[in-house]
Length: 398
Image (cartoon, rainbow, N blue to C red; front, side, top):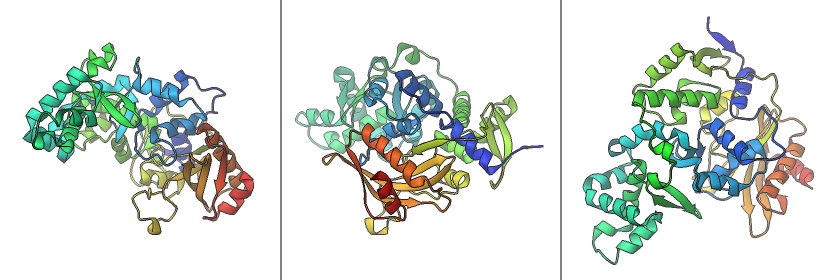
């Protein structure tokens, strides 16, 4: 008979797997930061900076205040512990996972975005020349490649967008990688000059072996999940996915379970913790792995969540950059946040409570906002009037 989990058990399994079932450390070391990324397996990068860059926020949610310079060191300076690639979306990943993505690199000619794939087909000479420029002068940005070459050549070859597409094709295919970032601008170089030698020399697994391992890692990071969510974590192809899951079930790495309120079979990671209680308190970024699959968020927490960045302002329901608030093992509120760096203010543009929010939601949220403000180097928290939680939150902040 298939093992059964209650909805509450599944929620606690997911929180434990994602790193929310243990207390935050008194001091955050580089090792602790890296072990958190290892647990998650992927940290998404996004250009929106209204609060903080997306890749910084998941670690703050789990660890509290930490040194972002240390994280940058692991991400973009030698010795490299993380590398950039298309994991979920644009992502930082543990560097040891690089061989597991070589199958995706090899498929760039068929699966990369249309624009960058097209330039590789229609202008292979451009792609080759960009690669040689990176080899000769890297680390280098796409803008530098374009600016430096435009005076030497005329015509569509050195149009900015074509150069950008060429370098992005080379990045997708693994022929170049991100050496570091200047501000948020990526600087490209050859993998052998950036990644550790042991990673470069590691054997390339077969597609089936690599994808099976990525499914196993997804399960470990999610704790319990539907098949669709296991596939979405690293954006794996449909072809062969069912076979990889079946192989992991047969090997005992995945356990088929029935979860209260879920349709169909779910998969529990072997060895996943089922805590009796979870006493978490965290603000979750829109791109946090715990909530980026919206249907799973709704099934686990009864919390309907949508990013409204691209929704016209008059049509937004909750706000531009809205973070769910985790308290205990439930998502109990959401806040639209903005870092007003010039004024030194963490601005709460709107605050809304869920129907099941406990009485201490405002005070606990105020404490977490104060912690975040200090981490971001902001002097105070200011709460605007919008949202049913705003009056209580303003009193708590005061």
